[in-house]
Length: 74
Length: 306
Image (cartoon, rainbow over all chains, first blue to last red):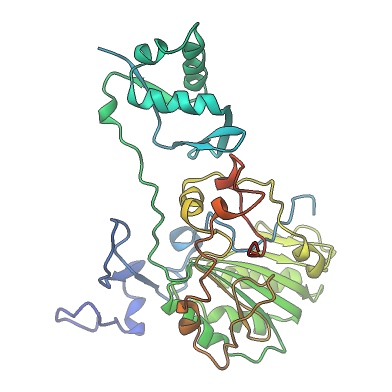
């Protein structure tokens, strides 16, 4: 990583350093929340092909994105 | 000690107007039950089986408890206070959770800029519709814009692709972009290419134009909790059509401006854009009385009742 010193959490890690990180990194943006839930607000993924694999970072939503439904017969 | 019958935390009871239902959220199933049994289950959560039985004649309570137990709706326990209900709040950090983008070779808006804005909104899931004839370079440069965003999955619909290059190009695009969940290519007579790449004979217009079947149910924890408080069709979603118009969904006529002139972030944060997000199924006629309503995806334009 380019930055040795401890950074403020608002600072982004340079794009070119992302590929040296393990799969992904998260930095926290503090948000007021009424419930306990996800605390992270942002995840960035390396552009490295090796790290950007389906099994490691990909999942589909359980709510449909639109009203498209194509049956198996079609 | 007295024995209680407790629901599993993933079993949720819902009342309709005529019937009730138990949603088994971890097994994608719904058990329909009479409304009286909903009352019975409610009593059982607070009182022991023996205590509830004294309020009913015959062995009706025992029969229903056995039925519910056999169908893995709940369990027996002598320490009911040890088992708490699972939270039902729906909360995600994304301002926009899902987005639709329509694109063609004639589209004149800046896709990279849109990708950047969606990243800022923490968009996680994307649907892409590519109209007209597309080619490898066009698709590759399109998906490249989303490579380092926080998008987790991309569903792709392509209207048409050269039959000479489809076997070579489409799998390559799929390999180059691991975030793509599946690709549907229309107007294609090709047979099976590979898993998660589908070719369809019909036109994209006709197949996409078919309305979502409202009798289809979606039973899972995430959808259920979102359904309780939000309209799952509208909530945290933005759509950009091929002319750059910003909408709640691509099937809707109403637009909120053009991405070429407006900042998407400002548009989605405007209360007028999100005015239907909280109109959940409890407020929608024809659905609100159904015991299955929290499993229904209400993919229809909302019209205010006069």
